[in-house]
Length: 208
Image 1 (spheres, rainbow, N blue to C red):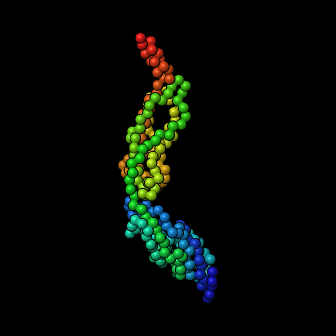
Image 2 (cartoon, rainbow, N blue to C red; image 1 turned 120 degrees about the horizontal axis):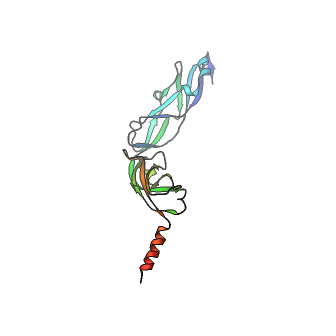
Image 3 (cartoon, rainbow, N blue to C red; image 1 turned 90 degrees about the vertical axis):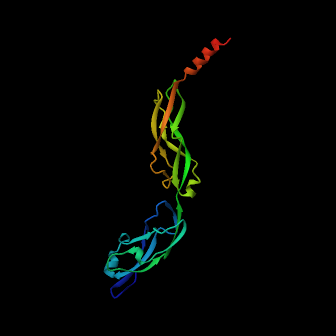
């Protein structure tokens, strides 16, 4: 801080930068900096009282397009308490990379946990639906080939049933299609382990 005739300057780090008006259907993929150093001038008394949270820094992304966007950081992007003047902002420009969200249909895979009781077995299962549509940035969707359900417990499962299980998305930047239910129905068919061997014996007895 430099002071002269009761005046002073202060360089203060402001974070995070607030991003406003993200265009619908777009994903913010990266930004060249998530903080900025703001140099302000004011009376020595005010300088001593200034805290980082007293300064706000934002960027309006309303006119962003897919790809790399360059935005200048100016006095209009900063709010400071009365009595201060903004002298310098570093960096003075930010590079923001945007991607337009796309859709992709992927298989749903159940996650089983636990085991069925002794003397029982799960002979089949069915998911409704078996596939779901997800939305996200193309670079993120490329790496996703399936989604999984939440863990489904088989312990204590004595008879066939139908339950609901939530779909777990691999990253917060991916979402299910608008209007989609948050999960799938799971039909589980349970049978006694002795059923099939008994039927085989009956067939063997009838064979010539």
